[in-house]
Each structure stands twice: as structure tokens, then as C-alpha cells.
Length: 555
Figure 1 (cartoon, rainbow, N blue to C red):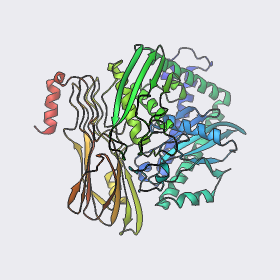
Figure 2: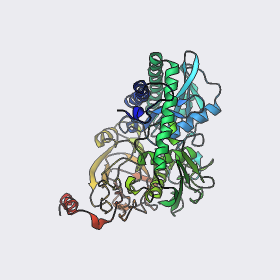
Figure 3: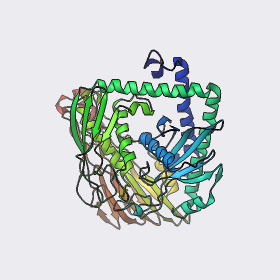
């Protein structure tokens, strides 16, 4: 029987369990169909192949999440909620058929490349909810192709920043806004395709949500949403109540901010009191000069993702996060204020936050936690001019790494980032679109942290420029410190980057971050992503598991 039917024997709304479950799945299906349209109609491989996008439904009063597509990125669990809240507060003039475009990090956003659209949804002449989506655009202008500028010291260097502006007015696209956007990006023909894909996804949501309301009626659907939110909170409170009361602390560390070559600390203190959980980050490092500052929406969402990892049966609605309180971010690099740079917040800093939360609770509930994973999206951008096509290009790619070992087994090898469910773009697609050749794309043997259950292995890849000129930049993590193990497990190997230019091989000064590397024909880049941390004392690993490890390595 479905979770919605079993969480509580009696519905306070009077809706029978079957109808409640059907409406729950119907709302999720609306979002998932939006995801599918977004994916299939986008021009950028990072969306169409990598699935770096998300779509959802949000409450008309305060923007809290009603539902999100199952294939949307988890890091957007809280982000689009905060974006919608910002739009509701900022734009009281929206009408049926309007679509707002926004990527301002300080207004419920993340980094500038995550571009959001918000559309008010009207049913029978009344504002019923908001539909919203996010798509990662491979470029929004700025100092470096792809936007991952590792040396930025203010937001203005990172690209085009958009407050909530009305892109579509009652169904008609505003061509002036389009002209402004396209004049500030490097490959405008690709961006206009991504823009129209996001608009089309929202239009699909309007159509499908209207059909759902027509079938079940407004009163029934609204009652179901309230009941699902109530049950989500009840389930979360049951999980928190099972954690022993007390205070627990741990820290995760970032390599550097890209400008100052010194680690940044994310210090988390968790206080469990009955069914309430407070996570305090007051001991974390102060705001940093470089682009690893995190905005509030990204920090909050990272906490939500961590909790969803620990309790995967939680539904995707705002109710399940009601028992959580996040404090202590003021005055730290986890709540950036304008004009702090934030390019790394969503893809890198967020993963260290997830790591910090999980390490903190590992002491309290060791049987539900796992060692740290690779914890980096492996952001790599390459932009330039291809003489064979006569066109400019921007390639943005991310890579997987090892997951941490857990109480039931070894970590996943070459898994996606801990804040996403995106998949690696196929190398065949990248070679087809861009002037490069992948010479190697392997599992990074020996990269896993040892343990009773070892971590998963990272990735080892290398590509070579075939023609023309390209400028590369990196914004990654876990280059100074490998992903830590827990309960006696060892850390996985750290990230490694090497660049070959005209026969000279170098590594970035900041290990996992760098920019301005100009590549010509024959030059290459090599990336070895981190392995996951180990779970438990390595001496307790079974002989059979050790033999399997040896056989895999060919020993």
C-alpha cells in the first residue's frame, strides 16, 4: 500500500486513502511531465542529456512546495520554494499568462547559471498556485565561459544577474527582455532554445494541472494537499523523535574559496529535542572573498537534501521540513549578502553542507548514515571558437565520483553528486558537439576509502583538443581533503586535475579550482574524481569482500 495510505489510518480531511494517493501521484505527474518537456525541448546538452533542471508546484500564499518532479534535482527542493516566495513578495502585479524570469542569487536563487521561471497558475479566474522551474544555462556571460569563475570577488564579475522580470506578458513574449539576455551570453542560439523550453514546460504544467482540477475539483485537491503536508510533517517528526535527544557536532572542510588558498570550515551543531531538530552553523567560517559563498536558499536547500538522504521515504512537500530549524548562518559564508560572489554555492558548497549534516548525525544514528561521497560536481567549462563549424561554443560538463560506504555495503562507484540526480553527458555527444576527443573515461581504481564497507570508486577521464582554441575553467572540491570515512573508515582519495599545454604539465594552484587555461590542438585536461569514504573499521572487512577487491584490481 502507498505511503499516503499508511502514514495515518484516518485522514483528518475526510478524503479516502485511495483518492488521496491518486491526487498525490497526479500532482507529481504534472511536475514530472513538465520535467520531460523541459528535457526534450532544451538545446543545451547539460539539460537535454545531463538533466540539470527541475519543475514544481508552489503554494499561492507563501510559495511553499506542494510537489516537485521525481526527476528534478534535489538541491532545488528548497531553492525554487524560496525563489517563488521572493517573486510573490516582489511582483504583486502578475496576471494570468505571465512568466517571470529570475536568477538573482540573493532573491531565493543559487548561482547565476541556474535560471528560474515562475508562472502564476489561474483556475477559473482565481490565482490557485504558482508553477516554477529551473534550468542550468551553460553560460550567462561573465568573465569566463560557463560562468564558473573561480577568482571572482564580486557578483558583477560572474555574469548577467536578473531580478524578477516579466518575460511573458499574458501569453506574449517580451522581445526587449529577450534581446537584453541574448546580448549578454556567448552562444545566443542555444540560449533562446533553452528559454523556450522552460516556457513550454510551464505551459504543460498549466494544461495538466487544469485537467487534474477539472477531474477532482478544487476543494478535494486543496484538501488533499493540506492532508499530504500534514502527513509529511508527522512522518518527519516520527523520524526525529527516534533520534536520541542531545547535541551533536561535526565539521566539513572546503579546499579554498578560489582566491585565498586556505580551507573553509562548515561547522554544524545539531540539537534534537523530542520531534524538533535544530541545525546551527554559527561556528562556520566568515564570508569569503572568492565564489564559494552560499546564499540562504542554497544553504537551506542543502540541509533539506541531507535530511532526505538520511530519511529517503520523506515525501517532496513542505510539510516534511516543518520540524527543522536552521540557524547561525548570519555572519558566515553560508548566508551571502550582495555583492559576495556565489558561483560555487549550488554545486560545491551545498555538498559540503550535506556532508557536515550527515557527519554530525552519524554519532546519533550510525545505522542510518553513510560515509562521505565525492561531494563535488566536477564543474568543468570549455569555451572557444571551432574553425570546422565557424561557430563559438561553450561546453559545460560535470562528473561523478564514489559514494561513501554504508551499513549495508560498499559505496556506489561513479555516482552523481549528492545534491543532484543528473547523469554524465555521454562522451559521444560531447565529441559530436565540441572540438575534442576523450582519450580515457575509466573507473579510478584504488580511489575508495577503506572500511568494513569501502567507498565507491571515482572517475578518471582525459580529453584532448582537436582544433581551434578553447579556454578552460574548473570549480571543483575535495582536492585538499578526501571524502572522510565514519566509524573508523578511511577517507577516499582526493580530486586531482592536470593540464597539458604545449608539452608542459601543470596542476591548479588551488588544486580543485582554476581558470584561464588556454588550450590549442593537442593540449589536454585530465581529471581524477574523489573516491567515497569508508564505513567501519577496515579490519572487519570480510575475506570474500577483500578477494573481490583484489580480483577487480587484477591482483
